Length: 239
Image (cartoon, rainbow, N blue to C red):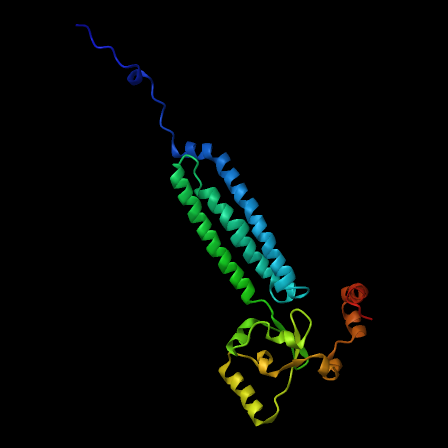
């Protein structure tokens, strides 16, 4: 008998194995597309974060004075950079579908955890009260109020502003003097942060007004201040 006929499947030439570098090159368009989709979704979350930071947590000048810009950098890092970058690095369209879903789930969990930390970090540093103490206005976070078992919105009863502005009353009598001294010793709550001494600012305006900066002197010292003052007064109803 003659030799057996060879199978056409075994005789067909096999494609050469693809190197990792070539596989990476072929996957780049899909990786960038996936990262772009992730970035688009992250922009929606970042827009919500910007609204909270600019309007709710750090309104007006608090954005620059009390760390709002730092909060924007934190949220941009964990939302716009971390997530899309992980997708670009890890996503591999040549993997099995189950493995791709596992990779995406890990990326999502990592970014959600980072976002939760970012929101907490930014929210915990936001000013919830602006207190007037010894000739200066000082921002107060929610932490000292929590030490005194007061909610973050405790000072809203003293002011219609957001965040509320309050006057810090000087201690009267031995009991209040002892409380103020104890706060200084313990160090957890500064005197200007103690809600026990908060009061309405407008009822103490006679004590505040003499410490106000003189517009004429400030205008001479800072030409930019003088140039922007009329617009500021018109916007806020001043004179």
